Length: 511
Image (cartoon, rainbow, N blue to C red):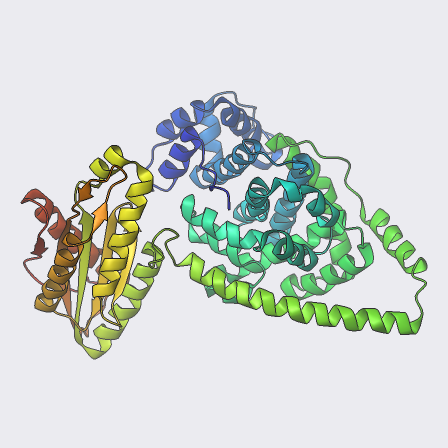
């Protein structure tokens, strides 16, 4: 698998800053100006009818353009531009990148149209999800440019057929790669989860399930414009949109016509060249012609259907297995195979709900490898990754069955210890500390390297009968352990420092 593409530095700064609720528009405007190609997109987009309407005057000032778009829209367009920059930087063989982006714009506009008919789904957010829906295909092509020709033969087939071909060609699907990109680019859940699970929307948590269903519907709706089998794709769109937004066939026709018209405008705003889009009248003619051309006997049709059922059952089994693997990937750190930060806090919130009601205690341990930057600077990142992997294995080996050991970022790890007080947490942390210090590590130059880790511990005691903000308690517990870790670092490293008092249960202000 090819290395995951990293966002250009200026765009990475924008993505990071846009996640800060206190970010200033002036700061964002300066960051946008640092990337001239993205600055041009921002100015052009801010002057489209979508943002300035028909009465507002055109603007040429980046600050005003940034203010007009707003932080969330700016973040979304930065994500889209990031994907395009990353795609343009790789060797894609015979892969038709222009056709790929035209298909992406179709999915983006289709998602926006469907969101406009579904209460509670932001159309602009849906546009971004639709545009990035198959960005994982580009990463697959970067890893296997030799398969571009074979992919071109099926790129306009129905989504389930394309998924099957991805498994054949690459051994994985674009949704698998979307999961890795979501973690690498630190995408928010409202974008990441629909990108990962749009082929299995029921697995997405309820608040984001409609966005995942919109993404799946957009994929089908966009295929109506590009698929060679118009009849089959149109039938599937009618069925799916009836279930999603209650659309009858006349409404689907209306949406398809609107889709073709709006693709041109959206592509122009993004600087993507697209051809003339088919209208519903053209699609129906092609679908009817395909019926005329079907000259199969009844026996041939039965055999074809039987083969298709067998194929789809086999593919459904494969997809089910892939979805389980996707679920694992979305909560797992790629390098160490430990749970990631997202999974740690999900498990922490579950545990807090339990002990609030039933009692017992809970300890949180935060650990950081000492002088890790020196290791990377001296022996390189390959050896640094080896150190991270071995430390992760050692920490996990010291934990108990019900404990959760996670990598939370860089060289920092954390352990969630249910039914554990401060003394128990300190005992386990010391066991981890000693075990890591005894690791047999040899650097590339043959030098024996001794690794040490510093620890901080915080704990909390249940039950609690008063009103509680679980999210606040979760953050407070982790922060207390992180603060104790700071004292371990300050006082010489390679030590365990407990917090002084149990973390209190945070009060819910609304209560």
